Image 1 (cartoon, rainbow, N blue to C red):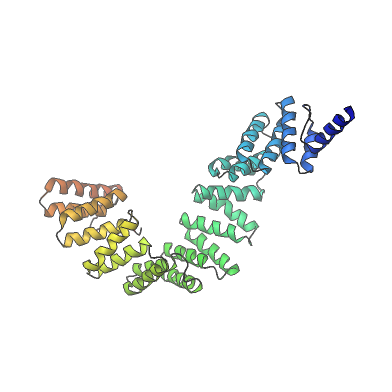
Image 2 (image 1 turned 30 degrees about the vertical axis):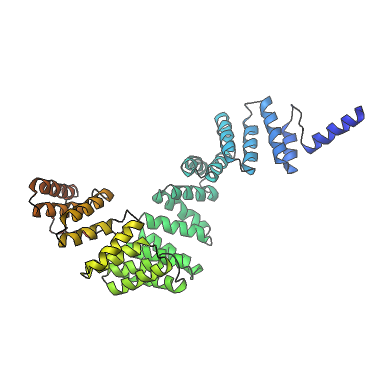
Length: 376
């Protein structure tokens, strides 16, 4: 009987299902090398129970927890280890990785910055820091780090695209155009990249070049979401309204519920002096997407022409809720109140317009009004 019990215990110990209370780091390492991660985890917990201030053991436990995708637990243990020894090799990078895996990009920035402070040539930390800045919409910082990372790995198209998008979103159009061109050299049939390059050209007032890129994207992938809308919008900007109308309708064939395409079709009808065609489209766009300021501004313009002033006022008030600082809606509302003989209300709205331009250092309303609605 004693021999059977002894053999059973030896079997359990060798399988890692039972561990002595006094497990050693060697025990934990051996179990990890055998791929027995849960058992190795318990072994490290035993080591830490014997010496709670063993920062190395805490860091090793955190690594094992990360390998098992228990990132929240790993973060807690990494921080305990850091409190005991902030100079442990690799711990800041591992902490940053665990936070990154959890999607806590803002929290991941500090450990990655620490890694780069100690080792500016650490491309892994540099890349992850750039992506973390991108995820937290700090595009200037993202671009600074992604440029270095992308230069170190020029064949990484995802990295190049993140850099290009960061530049685009921070309105550094020269950087974004150059980077998108590099991407297209490696991937010339990427409709998405042609579209993004088109956005960069548009942002740098190269609308004709932007149209060429969207045309290329539409040829490559005619059903790519928003490819026809983007092309239609560029035509709309150049007042090529019939070409714009065709592209917006092309977009609706791909996506009948595309509110952006519908609102610009409504705007075209308004510009064509066709209120009966414009109003249903503008109302439909609002039903699909209630935050389309252009739809409210266009409805207000139509109702004002029709002398339906209460409806015009309601539309302008809806537009102002979406963008209280834009002076155009206040100016139009002031003119309606003036027409209705509501002098006090009119003066109040005019004052808001004047205040806006005084703040901008330009008091010439003649050169500013009417302000075209911003693209939604």
